[in-house]
Length: 101
Image 1 (spheres, rainbow, N blue to C red):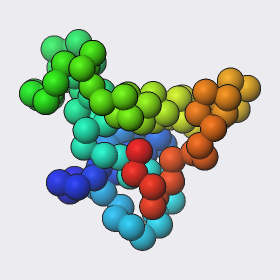
Image 2: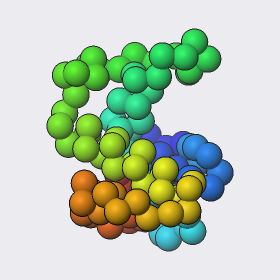
Image 3: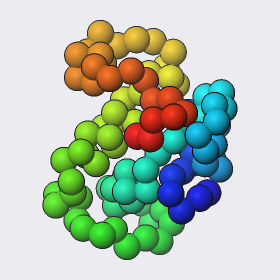
Image 4: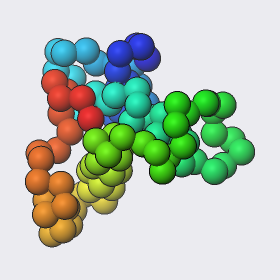
């Protein structure tokens, strides 16, 4: 996993190597602050040790939006359905390689 971005594969169930700017099927690029925010929300004792830069309630609104979008599109991919509210809440297209979420 690179220092600039993570790769996320809904079909593989989590983080993978950063695909970089070149397309790789079903792998989304994700910003480190998005992963840090999601890890900060994980209460399980098995979660990897981490020190989030800020508590989740103090997170950047854009990071919160990216984290919500990632979880929403991940759920859509895993369930293989298009919830009617998904595109109303997150009108941006699904995560893709070139765009980091």
